Length: 208
Image (cartoon, rainbow, N blue to C red):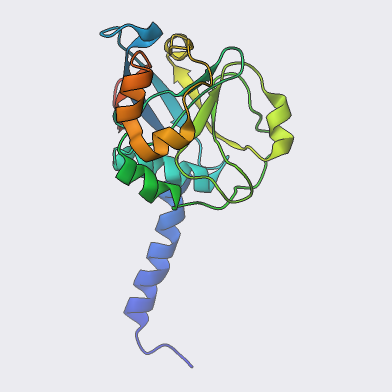
């Protein structure tokens, strides 16, 4: 049946063409961090460039995380030299519980985008289990490509800062304890972990 509301149909059609446009644009996210090397007051920053064309769902989740300040005060709880630095569990247990259940589907794997040094990727425990945990590769981790870990961005400034994130405790912090007790557990058991002060999306004119 022919549409009786041509103006409304036209508006919907226009909106449908606009949504993919912003979704496909790259954007930059700045991280302000503290306790580099385990020292309070030793601060720095790094910037990642997010590429929605690499992993659309992962990029959209990154935008959501930044806009909702999900990672503010979160700790870098897993740092394996020469492999990855991982974070993403919110510092408040209530927020951690909420986001743990908000999983996103897997993005298709692109053979031309690899887990190279400085590339950022969502962690997962199985198919379609990505939530808010991510990792930055500290070296070329090409073995992760075939395991279903599609990068969604890369560090474009401050990789030297990323490499100063405290690696003293390696994989010792318990993810289960972080989920249930948050920063209370981490501050007590691992008080020198590097942590995120703020995460913000940069404007196109914003300084890196």
